[in-house]
Every structure is written in C-alpha cells, then in structure tokens.
Amino acid sequence: MVLLLIIAVGFGGFVAISNAIGGGQPSGQPTGAGSAPAGQPTASASESSAASEDPSASPTPSSGDGCEQNLVTVTAATDKQAYAAGEKPMLSLKVTNNNKVPCEINIGTSQMEYMITSGSDRIFSSKDCQAESTDLMKTIAPGKSETANFPWQRNRTVQGCESIDAKPGAGGAYYVFTARLANKTSAKGAVFQLN
Image (cartoon, one colour):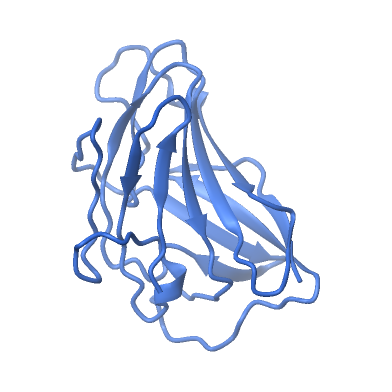
C-alpha cells in the first residue's frame, strides 16, 4: 500500500513528497505516489536542495552562524487521541527552530524515525523496512517549524523487516508515538488509543 509522507512548512506552501521502500511490510513505510518505481526513494521540492549527509549526524546548520542545536527541538503528535476500528492514526514529527537566527537542517527521510511502543513492547519503527532514504536540507527561520505527517497502517514491524503476522492490539489499547530527527528525540511521546 502506498502512503504519503508530506513535509510542509508552517509558514509557507512548500511541500515535498519522499518515497521509501516498504520491503516485507510495505504498508508501514512513508512513500509517495510519484513516478519512481517501488523501492526507489525520491525527494522533490521547489524551494530546497538535497544534500548528502551522514544519517547518524545531528541536524546541523551549514555554517557557524550562531545556530545552536540545543535550541532546535523535535516534538511528536497525533491528529486524535483515540481511533475507531480500522482508522489510521496520523503521526506528526515537528521540528522547531528556537534560535534567533535561521538554521539549515536535514529533514529528509534519512534523518526521521516514527516509533510506536506499548509499554516495553516495540510495535513499529519507520526505519525497520526502509531500504533507502533521502536527505532534504531546509533552512528554517527563527521561531518557525516544519512538520512531516505519516499515516500509520496499524501494522507491526521488526528490525531487519522480517515478515510478521501479528497486529497491534485494539479494544482500547494505549500506544506511545515517539518522533526522532537524527539524534534529537521528542521529549514527550504522544499517547493515543486504538479501539
């Protein structure tokens, strides 16, 4: 199943669609409806350029112009607190520049992870079945944010993308969504319920 990962700037009309492979769990990956063949990630944007960066590196500015990384924050949110049977949660990863200067940050799929847990049970990670990823550099103005939305298919994944038939429990079960961009993780997870 093909999904959209939409990266939108809160102060403008910029939209980029990124593809990633779903491997054995195709319904759990952020993918776009572009013309690229399945498994070939792409990124497009009218106001930004892709740049190669180490996926394990922090989202850093391109120059030492006063952008302090401890003032760049990542938050996790869902569009609802409870979902009816079959309803897909929309997970949002938001990166905010709390500096007084613009910061150039890699907001590509190479840096993002959407993680869902239930207690100590690791339910889902967008990285599990992602065979390829893209970099997307974007300058975020002071006090502004960018948000990437991911519709979760209510599926389980495991590291290495091995096939798994188990589904997350419903019937009022609670889950926590944690967002990560490079080495920055949301301070609080977003709690939601599946019915």
